Image (cartoon, rainbow, N blue to C red):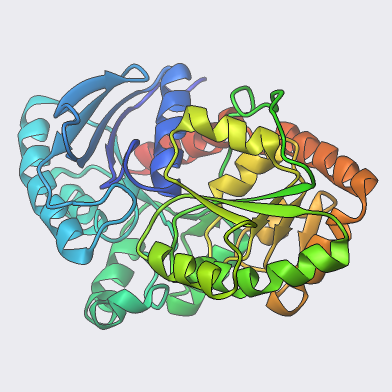
Length: 381
């Protein structure tokens, strides 16, 4: 007998157009869960002039007041302000409506609220980790991690499931706390939307990087190598850096220091529609990151039929097989040179990228796994 559909309360301090990969995952998972017949309400952060309440993907999105100032990044005090506002909003919601399950994005900041809801209202919860909510992941939260470690372990243990989006992230989580409820469900991509289009190209090879501009994304190790890459590849190269963040000024300084102004362009934060043109013009997608969960931008690049050069961080094992090259910083430039010099290899790897997405990484497939977990949690709860 098919189990009944569930009413989901989703708590996530980031939801498009604000946030990064976790926000994107929340958008597509709730969309697919709704299409499967479930219902959802998302409680997220207010930002700028976004409406405080609206219907998106057939569900309700409620934005609560928070101190958030930047679209791409949130500080801990800003997260805490969201948690406080969300607490009062959720209490009001639960007086009016019955929810079967709480789907919580990130142990920090939303985890404590999910734990409270279970204790007070007997509603079970699952947590989808993002990477930054694992103690030790970000230096900027070093002191806070020490204070939050024990409460976070308890939040994990009392959940009905803790989901990592890659094996690497699961391993990192186990080093912090070997919770038996840890499991892996990968990210996905909207492969119907992210399809290659015709686009005007520059002469030579177009490298593309898309992400928040943070120190941990590793571009500072690649910029000094670009002139050498161009010389050895014997072809003009250009790197488009799409995104924004606190490390932007340092990257611009490096670009000027190495006289890379003609090779590198900073394109800023782009909306979803504009991204298609950048992916379509690109020949190679690069992500020299120190740490990830499972990067949505790599999945988008794969869906667009691009070969990938990526460091051996979390998610690389699942995403980069026969469709690109995994290389540490010492060998990253050589991997780019290899692809620059071999158009047939680029074509073959690009085709593999698209096929791998169609086979294993579509949001509909990923949402089925979450739906099963959510319904199991409701049954147990």
